[in-house]
Amino acid sequence: MIFIVSLLVFLMLVGAAAACVFRDLISAVIAAALVSLIASILFYLLQAPDVAMAEAAIGAALTTAIFIVAIRRTNRYEQ
Amino acid sequence: MSLSLAKIPFGQPKPKIARHYIDRGIEETGAVNVVTSVVVSYRGFDTLGEVTVLFVAATGLGAVLRIAKTKAAAIEPASFVLRTGCRVLFPLILVFGSYVLIHGHLTPGGGFQGGAIVASAFVLIYLGCREKRINDKTSTVLESLGGVTFVVVGLIGLAVGGYFLLNFMPKGQPYSLLSAGVIPVIYIAIGFKVGSELTGIIDNLIEESK
Amino acid sequence: MSVLHNYAYYAGAFGLIFIGLYVILTKHNLIKVIIGLGILETGVNLFLICVGYTRNGTAPIFSRAGLDAELMVDPVPQALVLTAIVIGVAVLALALSLAIRLYHHYGTLNLREIREQKW
Image 1 (tube, chains in turn yellow, cyan, blue):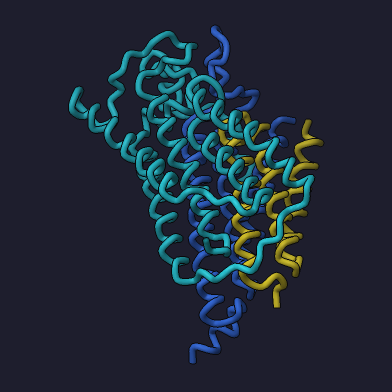
Image 2 (cartoon, helix red, strand yellow):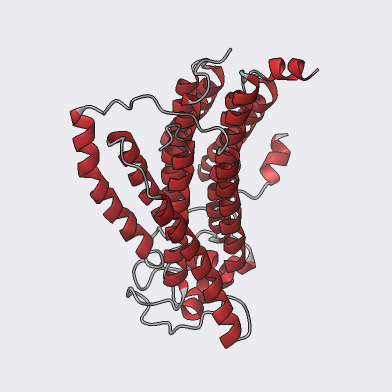
């Protein structure tokens, strides 16, 4: 059990570091969506199903859609 | 450093007010989901403040982006697979979102989660069938109706009993749909408001003007 | 063994807060900074839920009659985090609309170039 939790936390931190390093902004947004998704799984493992549902619907889906629409109106690559 | 880390109470039992909410939650509010009764009934005023913050953010976004609209190029239609897939998925996601919205006091879920799922269904329509847009007036009317219902229910509680957001409707049987007094009414109003607000935010951000 | 369990969750929350702060403080692109703000908010919400967790707890919902009310985790942080997630998405949307206006006015989203152009 602790092995699974440690693996998930490690993947989440790798995703956050990838969002920091990528120069293509759309790839950075997808990495941030991965962080949101694994945070939703951790919320469920911490016995909070309401919060897990809210984070999955709002953090992973709607925040990513808002970011991609905003990036489309500005530059795609970080200068 | 590890000595100081060892002193932090990880996983210790919880403070006294959580005990009160869990033990007396069902008989005081009638909702089986304790988190819902905390969000809507015990701390209902904080939820009113949060709905206000969301409303101000959506209005501010509409005001800031009004000047920056540009004319559209010809919109190329999406491919056949995408169009058909979006048309098939849209009613299914809408039904699932409505289910989560209505059963907020019985299962995990509620107004915020259901509203976000309904907004995701509309984003899917923007992706697949690109020439359809949301009717502006319907979205504004739904959003205002949701907010006004919340405040009016609270004021009726103030008029009937002693304080704002009093639970004045009868609390039926604990596990049925029409239970928990005024909580389902408020949560459905919040669900409508959040869903139409998030859809309006995406609609304002998309570049092509009408 | 279950104490080490909680350490993993807290390490994840603190790691996200540090990475989010690093992105806000050192990156030049405005949209990167807003992504960092989103990661920081996710980390803070995770930390708040970790505080309310007790060992061998169950979810605070009476889904069947006769569930043991002694083992349930704290419902108050869950209610607060529900509010915080929705407010987080509202702040991100408003910040992105201001970034789009900046792009229309200055032609770039690089914070160093914008700062030089003001003078």
